[in-house]
Length: 315
Image (cartoon, rainbow, N blue to C red; front, side, top):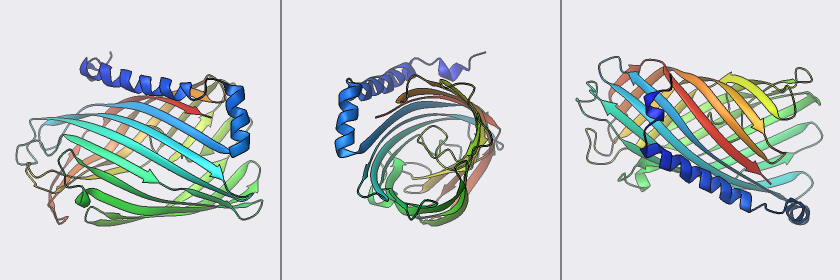
């Protein structure tokens, strides 16, 4: 049975909007031969992706329920500045529409509703030699409700990763992310893995833009040049500033959990592809804090099914 939240008409327009953006991206590459010739001269790689993500209604442990509809757009470019260094720029926008009903844990009111996130990043890729690679990505983002204070909704930080290639089929390394803002300093280490297990199997971090986000770990099977099947998991946490009209004026909201997913990818060419995701968000928690970051309340929620369609282009 198709979940009811997918059938709501108001989301049809949003999905169509993303589809139009995708078509706009295609028009930038109407003439592949001309575009490839031009890219050889300036050596700039462009990428674009858009995805609607639907999370089904889930019961809160202390009473009530909620669902989430999440829409995202990503655009990025990278350029070689030397034989060993590439510089990049990326911008992303996320719109998260939470729908609460009957909540008890948050003073009986909706803790938040519509959240916007705008992010900017300046990745640097450096190859020290044939085997060592270093990735450094400083970034800044705004994350808050529609009327949240802009300066209080900023978060900035850096992610650094070093990897070593032991063979053409296996690279391994480690990374560290440090982020400051929204009354919190967050430091998290992670492993970077690229392991081509066989001719058709790959284990790697899904660093590319998409519904499941960066990091985590995914195993991919490629039965042909046109199809990919994948499955993986990760930890996700999203913090954002609240407006001054709710139960926690100028406070902080947070949603976290462990998404586990399967993916089916259809490649139409080396440049365009379509990803279908389905999965479950486990160990989910909603948390609310005051404007200084002191916890006011939290509630766990039952496993929530989610699905997404990601359309992307690279040229």
